[in-house]
Length: 210
Image (spheres, rainbow, N blue to C red):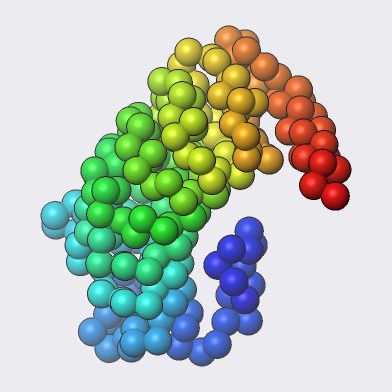
């Protein structure tokens, strides 16, 4: 089992490498995180309103947090080998402060249901990102930042509004293969056009590489 898979079959991960617990109910001090590579946390709470009180796990590859009162990404720098970060229903999240301390080799970030998150430009500090999902998040001013993510292959912003409506950076990105969005009247392109364009370009590139 690999963290790169879109849908991870956690039941196939060896015992001890995958831990899933509820912050409100678990006795965290009694949990052995020494071999943990995949961690899912529910209902995380922090007096500092960040992730600094998460357990220090040196080999962690995948972190998923469902519900948290954190307002930033501060506290995640301890995960030096993190490759994939998923934050769902972190409704207090306002800023990407702390992203500069994330593992620079991280490849997959998925943030959903964070309507207060409106500043996305600092995501460009992560040059190895292949997959970026900002679903049901706050307003995205524009998509110009995509040009500064050279390895990006998949970008999803379902139910997140791009304020200037210009979706051309998706078409101009040389490596982007997939994009997901909901149509809006002020958008420059329809989802079907973008899907067809990326699909045709992928086929053309594959033929040229034969």
